[in-house]
Each structure stands twice: as structure tokens, then as C-alpha cells.
Length: 483
Image 1 (spheres, rainbow, N blue to C red):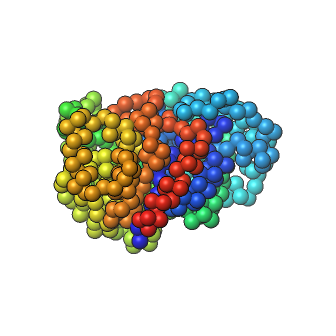
Image 2: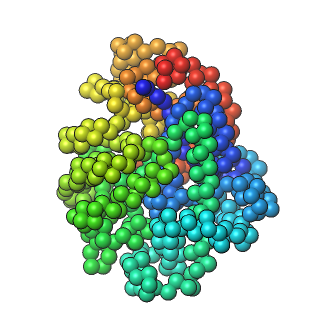
Image 3: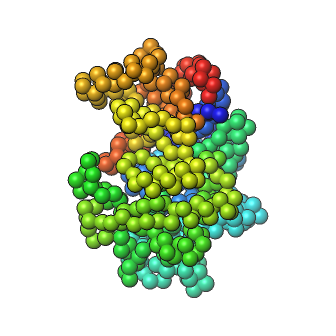
């Protein structure tokens, strides 16, 4: 049965506190999705954002960013007396640093007033989420060491996660407890949101990166799972080799997994990541899926990706392991770009839907839409659909016009034609970014790959007015094409 969804970062929801959160704006958004007939809400990663506010370079792959905790929720539940709005005027951008600073004083007030850390529920949360202490300790030590790479910390701190019984954390007890409590509240709010989405028959689709960051509790607390040298720094790092788009390739900087150890450890690191995601999401998209089959490793001493080599990962064994464990979490494979045939074979062997992005494939005669696929007009890394169209040169627009006539696309304008075409396709899943439903231009795109800093990741709706006006149109498409 064909279905449909929407791509919308939680941070992009309208709010009076500078950023979307887990409470009322998200509940209202779910109500609007239900009214329109949209069945899947795809989110970007909700982990603590990393450098330049990227959700793909996080300090912890299991944690939720406290920035999404609702101040209204804290007020209604007696943690804080009141709060002032972040700004007198709704903003079209999220300033993560300023919002975090603004919310922090209310979090401190709430923590001072809370009694949760004495409760059985809080202790149960910590017991069921052992990563939380690792993250809290890592973050505390990271701040103490002025954001230095963890391999440059004092020896006892560098290896604290491996020597809990020998490491004295008493000086940091309050800091650790505060971070743990923020996670407790964030998860509590999110699980209530998830329950509400399910009550409206809406599934949540999550997104996790294949790699984790070096300066993360994931790497620091699981050092044996990565290729690290005697200095505890990665011997090799992740990226992709030179191609048509870049003559020096891409050097991402993430540590490479030690797959030999992970296999010996019965895939414990990755199994826990998948189980953590299953607690939150109904469907999971894995970014850079191809690395489960083949990955590119660059010697860490080089500053670009021209020198490196392809290695084979045990993806077949891992997905067989997941099947045997009966994890039963639908997984979407991000399989974009030039791939070895073995990547597609791995995807198809386990019947994982891949991805098709119309901005990449509309002008490519070799690519066809297939049934077991998630079809997008664009992703978080693409320009908006109208922005993309405006960026085409005249020759490309002529070719696109020929393609649309050949495919007999119906509609009153370019956007309407593409949306009708996408809805009428054979793809089982269809995900449309909010920006494309609203017909927004390039100013509103989420991210531009290869750039760093504002305005990447900062897109935010001022209100839901324009989306509400589009609901009859969206509902009409869903009913017309039985999605």
C-alpha cells in the first residue's frame, strides 16, 4: 500500500522560544498532518547538534538535544514559574547559540526546583539508558578541558569510561546529575509526543548518521570499536574520494569503525544504536548506508581525501544478525550517488527501500522510479524545488520541459506538476519537504553541503498560517492518488 509523509525538522517548527520543541507546536503540527492525511513525519537527527549546528556531528548518538525541551511544559508541570518569550517578533531563522543561552537559565531554575532525581522513575531511566552517564560524564569533562580533543585530557579522565571504579567523579556529581536530568525530561517529553502522534495514526521517521564524531561519548566510551592509534587519535578517518564535484574529495573527520572488533563483540555497538532508535522511531533512515558495504578510509595525517582506500564492511552479516534478533524496525537505506553494485545488492537482499530524489533524477533518463523506494522532491541537503528550478540554465529548463511533456505531467504550474507526478508514482513511500509544499524559494533551504555555518540548519516557520492554507491542496493530492 502506498503512503506519504513530510520532511520537517523539529527545530523548524514555529514557537515563541526561538526553536521548535517537543510540546505544543509539535502537537499542533501533528494535528495539521492528521487533518491533511499525511501519515509519516520524517525528522532530522534530534541528538545534541555539533559544530555549526549540524545534527550530523553530535556529541552523543543516543542523547536528545535539551534545546528541544519545552519551557511551556516546564511551566505547566511546576518546574518554573514563568518565562519570557525569546523575541518579540517571530524569526525565520534559528540562532542555536542564543536560544541555548536563553533556555539555559530556565533549565537551571527547573533543576533547582525538581524532585525527579529522587524518584524511582528517574533511576529506572538511568538503568535502562546506561549511555546517559557516559554522555553526562563526557560532556562535563569536555567542558572542564575547554573543548580539547579527549585524547589530550589527563590520563585518568581520558580513560574514565573504562575505569568507573577507579575514577572519582565526586567533584562533578551535580554537573553530571544536571545533564542526566535534562535527558530524563527530554525523553519524557518526546515519548509523550510520540504517543500523541500514534494516537493520530502518524508514524515518526528518524534519521541517524552512519558515523559518529570523534569528540563524542560514543567514541570516548567505546574506544575499542574504533581504529585509534597509540595516542588515542584516529589512525584513519571517513570521507569520500575525489569525484566530479570535488577534485580533492571530502574529508569528514569521523573515526573509522574497527569492524574486526565489532564482529568479535557480536555487533554490540551498532545493535545498541539500532535499539535506541527503535525506542523513538517507527521507521529509521540510515545516512550513508553504503558504508555498511564499502567505506572509504583516509590516513588521518592527510588534509584532503585524495589519498585513501576502499574497504569492505560486514553489512551482510550485520543485517542478518538484526533479522535473527527480530529487531523489526523498518530501515530506509540512503543510497544516493555513485555506488558499487554490491551496495545495491546488500540493500535488495534485505528488502530495504532506497531513495530517489527528483531534483537529481528528473533529468536523468537512466534512473526510474521503482516501487520499493522512498521518493523525495528533495532532502535537507537539496535546494527547495522552486529554488532548484530557478537555478537551472535555459538549456536545462528546455530539457525539463520536454521531460514533463513526455511524462504527461498534469498541473497548473511547475510545482503542481511535479507534486502530481510524485504522488502518482509507483513508489511505496513519498516524502515531501515542508518547503516544497509551501512553494518556498532558496532562502528557505535547510542545508547547503560543502558550506559551514549560517544559514545552514536555521530554517524556521514564523507560524502555521501558510501550511494551513495548503491543507486542502495536500489532502486533495492524497485522496486523488490514494496515498
